[in-house]
Image (cartoon, rainbow, N blue to C red):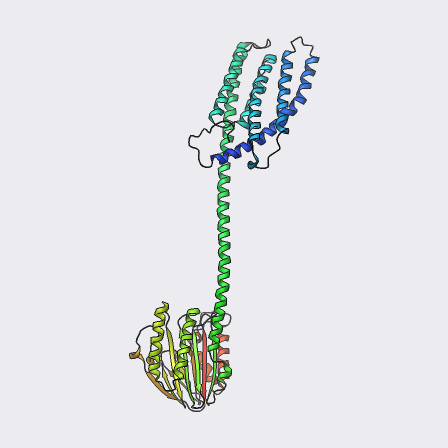
Length: 489
């Protein structure tokens, strides 16, 4: 829909039709505003016109005032018809063919009436000011740079100069004095009208494009917000599912670890254990499997690299394998370690995992302990309070890194007397840090053991745990903490 004909643009951009729809809506609103003025103006102007006419005792003909009255009255009728035959519009989508017809009809009548009023006023008093002002108003309100718009503009200029050259000047003026001034004022008026109206039209285009850009950005941002909201909902649901699965995995991991009530049933050893994972599922592992009838036990402790669900799976594999081996009664710790390594190595390849495990196995048989595997040092505390540090580095190799570690696996034997004890731990204890970035260290652990060596295994465990937690303070715990205290009865 185009009021003044085809667009002046030869190649219309994709937004042009949408802009014209908005422009026509704006013009319609302007038509209604101008229509109110042109319908009310005669009611005020005509009484004044005839009052002046009757009181002036003029002998001039009544033809021109009657013509002026008819023109103003006709415009008032057209304006009233435009106002009351169509309802105000709420937005651009409500613009119909009937509204477009009203716009074209009114603007054409308005332009014609401007010319008629100019001719009548010129014949009456040689005044063209009303015409020039009216034409500027017409341009500012209705003009659009298009082919028909410029043709209409050119015809209006031609009409103006034709009237000036063909109609006689009133007797109060002389043609020589006022003809040049009339030409000049007409040229300036037309030029001013076209410049102002074109500037306003271009400003409207820029405003439309800016608004369109903002709307597109708003739509894009809204879509991005909706996408982010949808993604957050999916992530929330996924996190809930993962947390639920992790809680199940942690529960399973806790179920396969020996409970304290189970450890209390051991007749020949005092055993106390503590394990605190840093996340839902830890990578630390320990187990104590006993045979009270034969006074045999299999004790194991390990640390899978990292923590989380994948590390937890490795601990479950270790527990299952160690339990099976213990029930074989007679086994060689060296062979067990090689077998465990092959199991973890092949499973890690299947899982495409780079996890590995530091692991030490203790085979207890009536006070004799065979130690095999590489892990943290084992602290042996004699009943006299003397400490012996057992370095496990020469006794094995990390499980799951190489397919064959048999050249690195060795055994070490120790003997426990009544009151002697063993303290096994993971690196989460000695590498625990406080808020000042200091590590707990092996020295503090040894001091805590020496200070409590003559107490029960549970009391030693509680004393060490309390000392570690007091050292950490408010600092976050970044690694799993596992402690195993064993005393010979």
